[in-house]
Length: 220
Image (cartoon, rainbow, N blue to C red; front, side, top):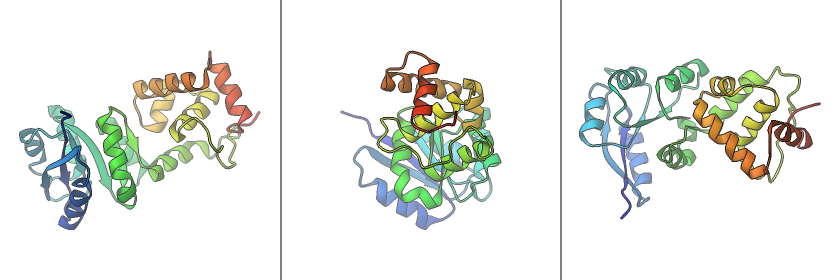
């Protein structure tokens, strides 16, 4: 029998907790095992109820989400953490991900992305909602003269994240540089790279660059 993913919700608005709980209760594989309206006892709460994933707001009374993440980093993460916040400041997002969060999405994306985020993080991936991902990507590619700013290719066998990775590889970013720019781990970058190579049946980086040029992802 498949074990349910145990989820703890932390937000200072009961109405948001109730809304997410109602949504997650419709999915047999998920179980909401607790919630917090304050950050003060979250570490003990998620440890005691054997939480798998904590969905955490940044703006919390007594101890905010950033302080909670720092506490987790210092004591050891008792579970994976997905940030659900109205804040979209890239500096803040980068700091939170560096501390060890597994995902970040804004509240404007919550309804359509919360289940997708849980699925990704449960599978060991790092997750950003599309709004945050585009903001991160655009922040360092907007002034790159080799990047093609046209509409993305249609019907690609690659995911949006994989297309971003192949663009950066083609622009000669190293794995470490890609991880720093996209706020993901080097291991995640390497996993994406291997998946891209397999999907495209590519033998080397030159093949990836040719794909990027052929599909107008970058300019000559």
